[in-house]
Length: 229
Image (cartoon, rainbow, N blue to C red; front, side, top):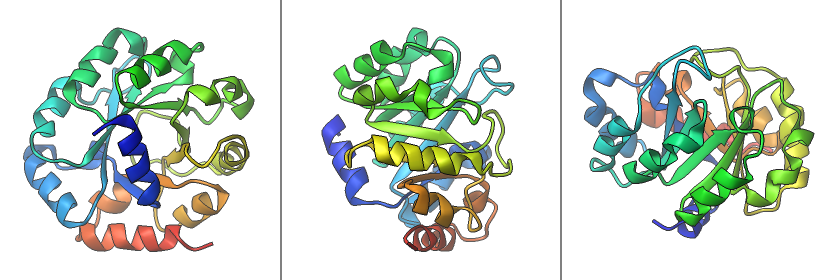
């Protein structure tokens, strides 16, 4: 799918609930994808960690590339890694439809965001809880997606940090309707409505989906809560 087609699909499907594969059952990945497809998930979110930029390790491009043949769902790769430019080509080759890099890992990100776009892939920029919005304002024209971290990146299951709400409100004023505003960290039934009201339309959810007995019910419930104004 082309970059513009992916953006159009995401915008037309809002709110997007993107299951974070960090919390899935790694012993049976193909079955997890089948369950998520049956639950009408639109996007699979891949948290890539290198043990350097964040204090945890997850999976890399080889896992994503193998899973690409299992589904046509949108693949959203969140690169929590140092020097993402060095490894970008591997994630492009793996078949990611969206690739998000961290401002904190690349303080002059316009080059890598442009490279992602030139590969016909959605270009995203993420900021950590301690990073103010004004530090990335000059890069907005290079972004198709902006990701606000509502936890410190590295581990799933953390508690939502309310500082994300003001950032979402600021970004909602700075971005046009075509820019996807995403939030990641502690997103569940108690937090999704307030992040939606603050301006988010793309919600990364881990424990609130994978720790339930029914992915279909979990996603439907989150979607319903995200549409409450």
